[in-house]
Structures are given as structure tokens and as C-alpha cells.
Image (tube, rainbow, N blue to C red; front, side):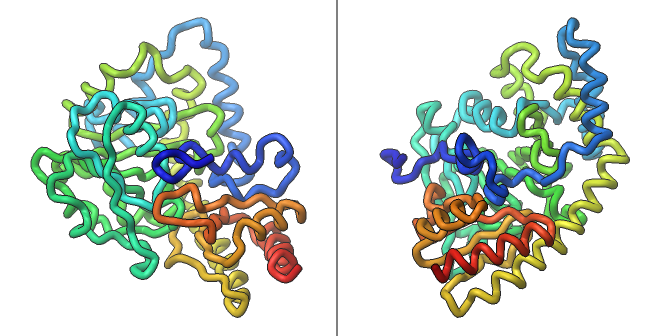
Length: 351
């Protein structure tokens, strides 16, 4: 579905695996495979004994604050990062919001739904979809950017993003995939020296909790207060709070760090396989640093349909502003799954 803005901003990867796509091997959704782990499922299940009581987010909020070395007044728990985008759009009084594309489309969709006129800064393929701070209008009072960016998998330097800060400007950085980057290099979460900084984190991608809806916002206390006033009472469920507390603990952080290195190795394997299709005109945007890669290929729509027939779901790219029908996004999976996909891709490109 196309909108008046030229792209279906509400289309997401899960659409590829709903209904008749349920039996496909999923390279369309960026949730880490084989999650949540058994220990986390058991921890969440144990919280069900407390469902009769209203949710109490104090312990989870304190745990998130401690994980980033921040006071609790700088933390807001949300029902996934998607709720945070809605809160920002509704609660903040901004005149000229700008979204840096290509990126996750929900921030722009939420802003438009709240009645804002949204400006777009389109990063260029010729520049590797890297951020050019000079391209952002000086009078923008809200700037939204992802890091690493979905779908390009580009990891922007933290200093380049921080240079976008201005007096009177909110700088919103979506770090939903930052914990998939070894060492979380280029992260801004925990920084208090960047004026107007708002960092969003999601716990659904790394831990396989998309169905539970849990994320958080890190920002100045006055911004957190504004967002909190826009939330309904008890916005995060007891099981989600239990998950949040567990996912920022020492065991989880160590496991996530290990997973980030494994994802990097699996991504390298995928990229090596994709390089073999360069003679067929397939190009990879990069360098990729997230748990997904973006590829350009002629006839991508037909290739995607052929892959479905061969048992694989991939994410179409033309719903992202700044991209067209020649782009596909591929989630990084384990080597065995990737090898099967590469065989299917060869057939899809040659049939």
C-alpha cells in the first residue's frame, strides 16, 4: 500500500511471515533467532504469580538506570520502542521535526499521526548511506536517526550524531540494534553531555520479546516527565517489567555481548556468500554493522517472490523513504540457515 507520502510507513518485516508466510524460513524480521532463551522464559513465567497486582516498575527502572550509569529520573520504561515514538510525537512541542532516512518508518508515521509536518533528510547510496550532518536543516527542532540504522545496517560515528545537537533541538537516536554491535561502539546511551539527547532502546530484538513489548527511553529528567505524563497508567505489564530487569542484568549483558560477536561472524559469512552474486548485479550497502544487511538487485520484487516459493521470506525495501523497488533487507542468521538461503538465492536469480 502506498500513502500520500509515497511509501507505506506502516509496512514492517512481520508482514512477510504472517498468514501464508508462517512456514517460511524468516530472514524478514530482525529479531534474533532462537530467543527468548530458556532462562528468560522461566523468569518471565515466574512473574505470572503477581498478575493480580498492578505493575510496579520501580525495580526495572532502577535496573535500567544502573545498566547505563544514570539516575532513575533519566529513564522511562515503555511498551516497546514503538510506544516511545508515539509519546515523543504527542508530548513534545516541536515545530519542524526531521527524520533522517532511510530508517525505521514508525517515527515518521507517529509524527504524522500526531499532526506534524515532517521533513526528510535522505542519505545517499553513493555516500554509503552515511550521515552528513550538514544535510540536516539548522532550524529543525526535532531530529530522528537510527544507529545502527535499520535497514541500511550503517553504524554512524557517535561524534557525527552528537554534532547534530543544538540549543532548542531534541536529538532522538534509535539504538534498538546497538546491543548487536560488539562493544556497543558508537553508542550514545548513558551520555549526559549532549544537550537535548533522547536515546531509545528496545529489548525485543536481541531477546526475542516482540510479543511482550518492552523498551525504554533515556533523556533529561524534564523530557522524561513530559513523556511520562503522556503515558496511560501502568503502561508496561508485570511480565514485561520482569523481562526488562532480567535483560539488563550481568548474566544477560554477558550473553548479549557474546551474541553480538556471533552475529558479526554470521554476518561476515552472509556477506562473503552475497559477494559471489556481484556478477549478477547484486550489491550490498555497507559496511554493514547491524544484524541485517541491505542489498540492491534488479527485479528485487520478482526475486522476493521466487524466494518465497523456495521457502524463504525477506524484507522488501521500497517502503523505506530513500529506497525503491530494487532493495531487499536480509536478517543475519546462523551459517546453516544462510547457506540454505544462498542456494535459494542462486536459483531465484537464475530461474
